[in-house]
Length: 289
Image (cartoon, rainbow, N blue to C red; front, side, top):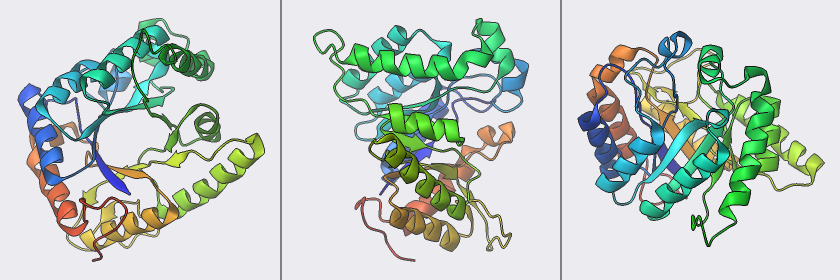
């Protein structure tokens, strides 16, 4: 199992220097994947959770590709209906080629009604638009004489049944996001297998993005989220997800307060603690606590 990190590319403490330090920290610690988020218009509903400045993902990842060597680079998640699919196909293919085949395209339908309105995209049609655009991406990349992208994995986000169905039909992996418990993920994996059997399709890989909220003492709440608690609890969560068959787990250290972006060292220390307790050099085995 591989371990990745979701990096905040927004907020008052984020600038090019901080993004560069994030990327080098993630790569130096041995993590496999660095992912960033996507918004185009920082409308009031977006700003409540992801305030300006917001660094556009394709531009940012292209730059980070030049300051890293090994770590994979991805979106968690690109909001598919916001851009013409041929533009996305071109940008993704170019980025994958520039980075030496390191791109992971995490995708989603979006949620911010005001942002959809600002971009002139019908909110009510976002699911169908996403499906159509993903098919268009696959068709474009099939033209290797033009796009020359090589394989670009598509991770489909969305914790709903519709998101799971989209992952089975159009994705390489299912990428559920945050605030998830291990039992809930275990149940979802069973539902995913049943859905894939029903649709006569392969079961997509499981690549969840979970919290990283390190505490000094164990969290005893019955609904404790995966990735929340003492280092022993977090390592145990990762081990349970490995046993469940997760291909990659993405750790998200952003707790929701934009002021956190002014002090990234807190997140870096938490990541270093995880790296110290989990053997990142051998993706399919764990260093037992």
